[in-house]
Image 1 (cartoon, rainbow, N blue to C red):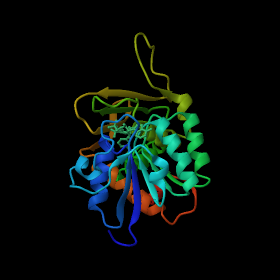
Image 2 (cartoon, rainbow, N blue to C red):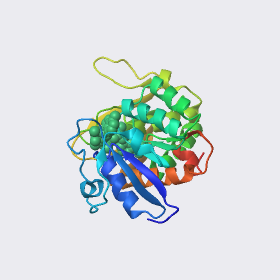
Image 3 (cartoon, rainbow, N blue to C red):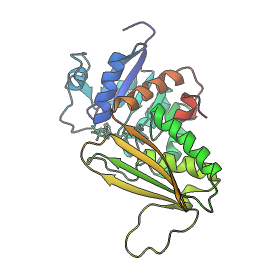
Length: 272
Ligand code: NAD
């Protein structure tokens, strides 16, 4: 550990992303694991974070006490669940540190709480922390702007592993927002999230979502722009969770010297 390393806490440390974050922090210069937090009742409390993540003993046992874990920390990497992320946002704001939020499935009220916390904390939140998906979002926005809504229908298809609990994915919604912004429409009122039974013809101008779940798929997304006689497909396939973890660590380092505020990966990557 170098003297100027950024001290990071991983919350949800025993999860798929939590373990990947511990590995990526271990491999990355300029950052160090300060503490590792899990929920009450987790079977992994007291276990060494490094051993759990397969990088050898780090001398950092998993704890249930975020307040203590955030003491002297500079940033929190949070891929947990909406209720946990709301709690961590309040604590990160009190500690005035960086809070990188990758958790998806958050409600509009949760988002308000993150924005309130961002008055004191430097919050970076994104439904997808990878460079590839954020670039894809920019391209989708350009395509949606260039192709007239009257003739071009937009559909977003995603597939994830069978353990995923929210749908559509945070990334599908991020891509939907990019398309809606490109078209100058409101996604919430113009999206079709489910189709079943006699739905009638497709309402013009809407953005449709389709969700597939199965196996161990890390995350596949396609945005289809369909017109009479032609189809444009823009897609991304995540092969390894480390792309999200590397993005989250890059976000923490980027936010280290920023003012309190609510930022996205587009800000971090210079794509905004
Ligand atoms: P997971 O279920 O494997 O891990 C989540 C972990 O968080 C679990 O170990 C759970 O015990 C822990 N946890 C939940 N609530 C907690 C709390 N209050 N305090 C402490 N720990 C808590 O799930 P995962 O696949 O790692 O995904 C986690 C989240 O990250 C999901 O919302 C997922 O959609 C999202 N995700 C986002 C990105 C991105 O780039 N933004 C990428 C992958 C996954």
